[in-house]
Length: 159
Image (cartoon, rainbow, N blue to C red; front, side, top):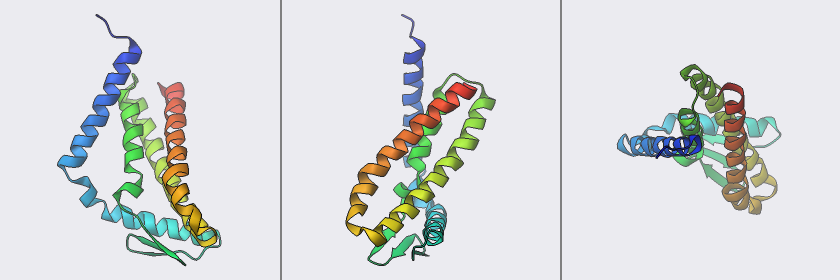
């Protein structure tokens, strides 16, 4: 039995996700993201201040009037990048197209993540009770939408 192109892509996508997950676990990557976490905290606090807020970065933390936002490994956007990279690697395209996709997509997701945290820091200052909902639900959906749109846009342009 021959697999359809969609089935082949689906299996390759799943295998890429599994490989990234195993590598993440095997190399304890979450224990090595401290410099990334601190950079994201600093950039996000700066962006929040540029928009009129009072956020300050201290290590992995973003300090706001009533709250401390800790940028842990899950807040780095690494899992969003893994999802996008898995799509790009699984999609039937040339290696140069894949390289272009990742060299544009991953920095873009990093930038969106900094904006996300800056926006959350600003919201905490004005509507602290909205933080949990926006962090756990709204931004998860927005990130998935970015991955979907970014993946489709890349596939249509380069795939």
